[in-house]
Image (cartoon, rainbow, N blue to C red; front, top):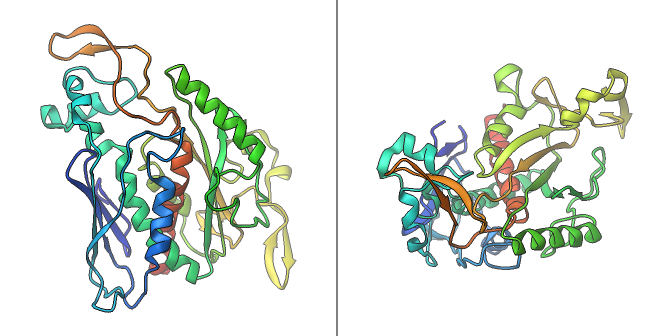
Length: 359
């Protein structure tokens, strides 16, 4: 796996930078002969798109993909790589000029300079920007359509923002979708309103807030994955950590299992409708790195947006002296709401790849 590619049988390569003329993706291995519901793709990408509400950046982008290859004259996938570009239109590169010499705390600026030197594209964070999650969502939307046809459903929601928690879905018999389309992505609307207040308070104080996304998968066949380094957890976690701002991933009971006894954490077996199931699902649908046929679920922790309006201490890389930095530009006071479809997209890409491999 390269720095910009994900998958084996289904391989997705992401390219571009935040303020480059375009960003995009190349999808290899997508089955031929499939009719893509492009209206559904657009609706899915709109869930991630910026500039739509008070809790996202005011930067507005159409995020309308231009498909360059991979379709035949009837609009069906033809087996060739699907290549697509999304043109960047609403950039303000001047907001980042002073950051060539003063790295932003919490961003990849300094680490990128250690690797790429002065060639690093500082505009909007370059290739480290969350802007590149747009082509990820394009590829993920195609994977979701394939998985839906296989009876596999994926849905994520905001598990928490600023310590305010949403309701927990039933891990044994989750009902998907988790919320009505077009609404704030939570199960408990009242908790969602509290989260919005917390985001707005952070924004008004020139600050930001982080949170947690929970993702659930139903209809996934048992037997996918493998032991040790072939485990499904490892493959999903590696991909999820490719999403900017992710700082932690936990499956099933996760870190909570460390405080339980084995008698509480073990999922007892039962027979349900002639199939082997478990009464509880602390394992999150995976044992020994292999799917069990139970719903798969995990959480991903997102840090607060590092670009904040408050003055922060940094250093001037030219003078090697301490300096104060106030970040300009347009940024999300909380990335979590827009990250929900990104988590779904990346999960879909990993699982479709595993299914195509028969792994």
